[in-house]
Image 1 (spheres, rainbow, N blue to C red):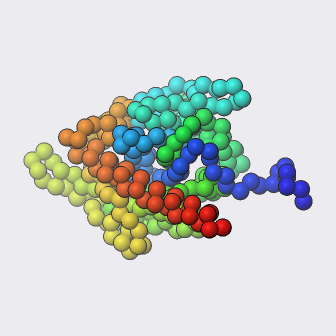
Image 2: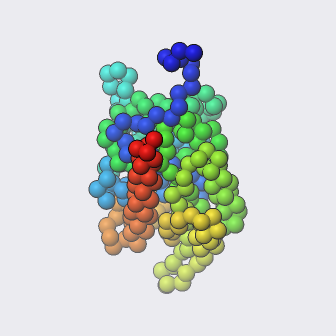
Length: 277
């Protein structure tokens, strides 16, 4: 057995220059996972961190639309790919490579190749955080991710509805199986305040926080249901760009600060372990 083993599966290798890799997942679609990933990335950039975002959602790569930038990335010498930059966030999406509405039909090995390429061939430079927006559910992409790069941790997004939370629990189990620490849970579309001040509870606000408690995990915060979040995402100007007078921007910023704090704590812990060895 030579060590140079062509065809030997490579273990996860840290990416030079990247401090923390954080996956954002959800058990099911439609809970606003990409909205949370994009707005968290922008909020981290506004907090002064260097941030990258990988859109690994092969079924609905919406990150380019939300960031308002859809041109094809430039290929640099040595077959490196230059990420696009929007609102202070460097990003790369499957949607940039397969333009238009054609769904990506991909099997495991192809997918693994793309995830590896996005991690290893993109010219990320120095980053404090690389956020990875996962497809909904549990499956191949997460496996490829953990086989390619050591993940600092994961954030799980859910609404408060018991159906969504049932699926969120499956996501928690999946991260447990691949030994990825869950940094915490986020409740999206929490409750809705009408112009007259009436509060509507559409999906069971508070359910996600109870689930976090039940699993002994951190609750990172909630984002209220607000048509503006969707409208701004649809026109490429995510809610997190708004100033402090915006309640939604504040919610995203508070979540981003907690994600940063938890991710750095986990990263520091694993560095200590390496030193002991």
